[in-house]
Length: 142
Image (cartoon, rainbow, N blue to C red; front, side, top):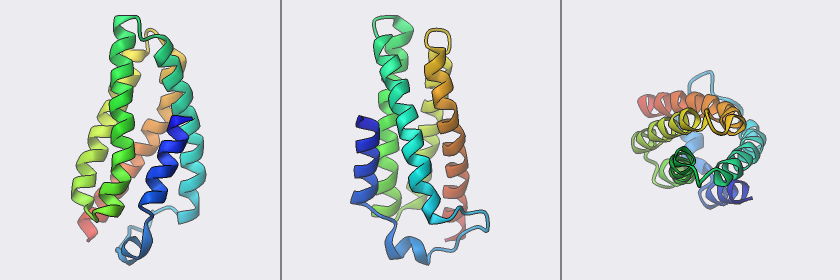
């Protein structure tokens, strides 16, 4: 629930707006309507993965994975205000690359103890990889 509510709050607090509409975009930019449904599904999967990792927190690897999970979630919630609120695609790129590294680290550390959580995070890692490339392209084009 925290994932869906936190993600929605982050997005609602700093919507794309006129600034984003005015940016030069690569031809492969997804249509705006796609982001809501994709992030809704991803946040549900992220939430389930987080709950699984929370249940493993008494194990050393579970503690590491849970800590990384919390860090990546904070970075996820921070990206939208940095990009859309501050209009800072360069700084947002630093945030999203750090986010991606934390997701990959979480998946890797969780794999031996919570394979289902790791699998649930893989589509998220793929989307954030794509979003990182889009963020970089927007930064360079503008």
